[in-house]
Image (cartoon, rainbow, N blue to C red):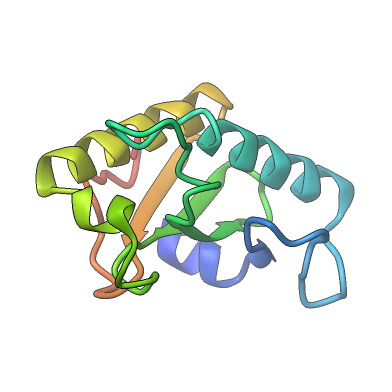
Length: 135
């Protein structure tokens, strides 16, 4: 099963900052909830270059989705939809954005997630280098 189809059948478990897991059954099973927490904590270690704020607190992580097997993750990243007066949003250049994407991928990989898909919230485009087998 491919990552896209695996994630489409997975649960939308959490939007960062929400207090619970919002799956189809009102909550994620224990293993998936733990994988989501681990993914969110990993993403909190990724800092926005030039600022003392992580990408979760800075609002760049819009959604985290984990497949039922717990080893595939899709993270929706975006910054253009936030407050137009946001200096953090205006700062993020393509070079900084590439660094954020790579750091996010490495942080998730360090948590044992095997297939990682990072997606731009505005365009739906895959961010960075994605390979089905080692993502």
